[in-house]
Length: 197
Image (cartoon, rainbow, N blue to C red):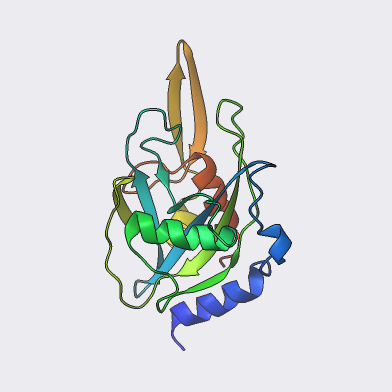
């Protein structure tokens, strides 16, 4: 067993069990829902995870942000796991069920910023298939792989700043080759990284 498989086994033991079907149910009458996939791959020395850069689009509150593949639930999705799988396929062309696997969920979360749409987001940790090709949709401007342990070592050593009039807001962020990873994605990564030694 190589180091990556050993890590996956440990993660399988440490991640919460898959929620009961009713917890993954899509409930459009209650609240908007979304699901994302934190995708890992074996990069030799250290596991890497995939980060996308969302395309810049007017009216999208997450326009241009670094994120994980995923998006809003559709009425045709069987549940939120199906949402994460479908959105990953649509956004980056990767079928996680074609040789990949889903290890487990991360906690449900919602934006902290009251200016953002009220939405619940369910992240899932997944493993990329051994072989795949990437095809970016118009919703994705770019993507890159980054070391999971590199993020853990660096910690929240950067910050993201935005200016609103005369007010400068700051958020803790992970440094990456694509820029600071902040906001909801930072919160998901922080939870995931807590499961790594």
